[in-house]
Figure 1 (cartoon, rainbow, N blue to C red):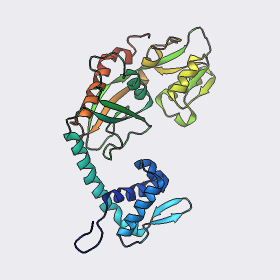
Figure 2: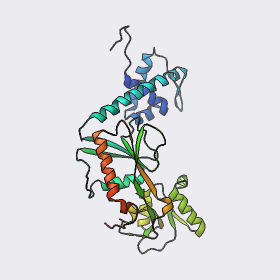
Figure 3: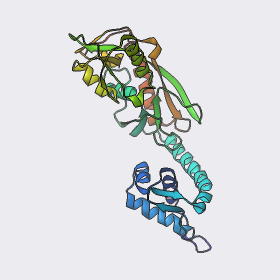
Length: 301
């Protein structure tokens, strides 16, 4: 498509690619971020550069691509375009009354485990069968304004943004071990995760008792397998430990490391039928499973 003066119109998707390359520093990383192949990213970036007369907008370096002066001048207008396009996308999604499609949820590992195991569980408000739930586990909350996810269920809600945030409930955790074992060794997180509240709590017990560490593992799933195998004792969410027959609870729920959880959604998407249905389902789960999540009612499967 040409403009009245005969020049080619800019493809707005190419501007999105330009921003992704600028933010990620390479064609490969930008492709991962956008779900496109590296050759596609390269072609679209070349088309975007050609739209401005062909000057390179990035310096090609051994370590990747770095914006040059020409590229820097285009960041602000490209970001304005992105905000407008994303606003239109969110509002288009919010206007659809159809209860079908995929709803992408940004979660940490505890929320991921709880929601995944609840998909086929008993509830007074099951998730609509036309909706596909997509759980994306990460340490950081996805950027909801950029539609990296449709909503989030997180322990730490963002402090800013045009977001709707509501408290869901609390995950309690306690110390568990395999029934019939008496090892005083601990299973905990890695040194890189020493800032986690659970890791700090275990570290204090280790200092007080001069105890040993049987395993350091970066995920709850690996820790659970080690505790289940009898390698040692460790902290687990009560909804996990109480429901695992080989395990026994050694302590009451530890109040200082109980984790409050929140649902977070961009205000533009809050009224979208699919998103609203998933939020309602998650709220109902937290309501119905409140005593299990807080460790008041030990449940056995």
